[in-house]
Image 1: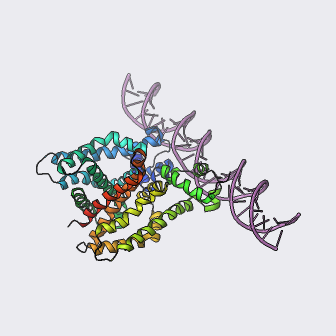
Image 2: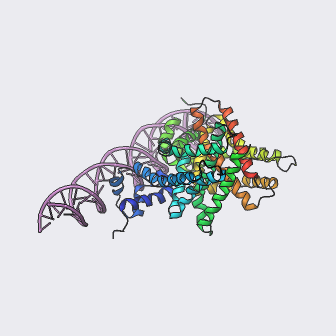
Length: 204
Length: 204
DNA sequence: CGTATGCTCAAACGATCGTTTGATTCCAGC
DNA sequence: GCTGGAATCAAACGATCGTTTGAGCATACG
């Protein structure tokens, strides 16, 4: 009874769900392979180790996320009529829209969780692979907020990231208990985040 | 070579350090008891189980934190000349000042990590034991921000919590690499958080 | 002095972990 | 139809986990 999707992708999808629920240490390969309907040894065969599987889980989603962020930023960056809200939307909306493909909302919890764990290896991985995205956003924020010192700007962007991370990590959970359609809830979250962050960033 | 501090407290202190570094699942009782210089069985003897030890780690710090928060809030709540920044300071400063006793900054990472993990048991524990604190703060915020709807206020307080949690979780790490005295760094963090949050909370 | 109580200790328990192995099945290419 | 590499499988490996056990030690009380 082979399904149409490959074993590798079934593992990746099941990994997102399991890691979001139990964490990276808490979710075992036996639980994972049982949920995915594949053999236990398949993880080590296709990915080499559990750690490399975790890395692939991140890479698959983050590549798409940061590509969307950069594409959205490119549409508004450098233009004279661009507002702070435009740049914040480019930064925030793709992160929340990851949930549009079903298991994406679970991945957001995985990411937020890993981010909060401050694992040094993960941070280095994120910095190496996606640091240039943050650099581009920071440059555009600096252009729109010339009155802020570099240090002040870094501080405020970090607080925006914190609010976004927190909202992402709670997204899947609130969603579960609510009967509001996911799309609407996502829009509300994005709108609140953007307005809150714009006010926090631009205050004198 | 018995130290002057009790075995129970040595375990609790070592637990904060270990759990902050490795997480609750990643840190084992053998690593913990080795670092604390006590026997492996001491944890189960004094606390019953690893889970109850984790609970005690939280309770010891959070009792003090929320007592400080409520004391600070009581000084300003209900008064006609109280500002939004005053209430935010009562909410934020005790959380950051937990670091003043050395291993406290590690506990902040533990707490932020656990909070991000959205463990259902932990959330229930926090809600049952410290929910009244959040309720009092929410009431005072509502008094100072009468133009906001209840729903709008909940949203914004949640974003403030996210920014605070994020700042707390990064506190220990940034501190390690910096040569700025901890007290100064804490003041800067608090000042940025309060101003950022006040702007985000009070925007129209 | 005898003994009860609180605590510490080395050792072992069963369970579960990530990983490896070697046989087996599958399927494309000659 | 045969062959060879890719993929899957059950089974086992050694390591580590949280927890339990029972003997040993200390101190306080009758």
